[in-house]
Image 1 (cartoon, rainbow, N blue to C red):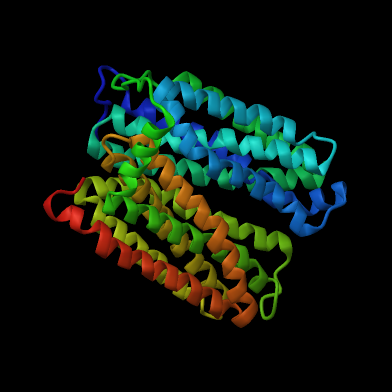
Image 2 (cartoon, rainbow, N blue to C red):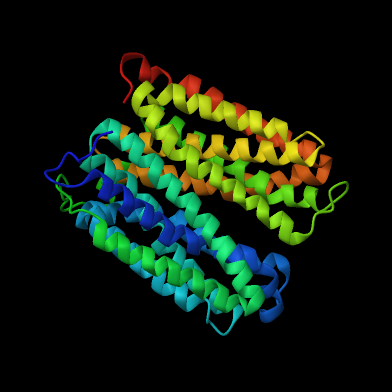
Length: 400
């Protein structure tokens, strides 16, 4: 294990903990409404699909903000920009829960997502600049592991608190936990030693930097992989609940909610995949994780509930392992526009969540769970093809 960052006396372990705290601070708030949507709908007098917009508004804000945040990081530094991002997200998270109308809740959640976007947009560029290349692969795994912890905490904390009090108190409790994590990030995040400020860029210069990444075939392949895998992953979690509350399982809603504990498999697999990538190269580990995701997906076709849940755990482990490697690689491969590469990766990642996560519902409507598995299976298989055609050639001479 590498114990120090490349820049001077900066502690490698301190950077890892800081990034995990940043991930928890933001992603807990991003998903906290998901477990309390029925209470939001009842209290604010809206339908279930409109209540779900409280999640979509934040993810939309995140998606549109990741690339602009990359330019902010280039101008003012990754660490200072991330401090602004986690602080702003926490303040807006506390405020969103107490807005008097549904429309104001959505508006504040939208801006909260804009601030949240600064963390995934800049984290990979921050760590790739500050630590050794192989250590960065491990650190990327820990950051993704932190996002799984945050996403899980946002759901499992808000729901029981809301049951005992209200959805507003539930979301506020999550924001207070996020505030503690944000303070920890500010205190622990080491100063940047290798950051080079970008001066005097105009809109055309920024556009050229984005296009630099899009013209790189392996990077474009990694963006496509993010779109396909995240879209398929969200589709599984969106529509598995419909299967579990129906015949033959007839699970109550609280039991279906426990399926999110499968995220813990990602908490374990993400950093582990980073370690394996550092030892054996990113490409073989990434392909292996995608295959593991596909194997878990196919296992969910089984009828026994324990096999369905086992398949969900395996699929989740494979997905987050693949995401940790791919997201770190997207930052590491880009040399002249690293922040923009991370931003484009996250734009594709959350774009896949929005587009394919919704489109999986058409498959569910037409052919049930088998249709969802077929839909996600095609997306996952296409990801393998993209890796073979676009990404693999870059590894023939050197694994970067």
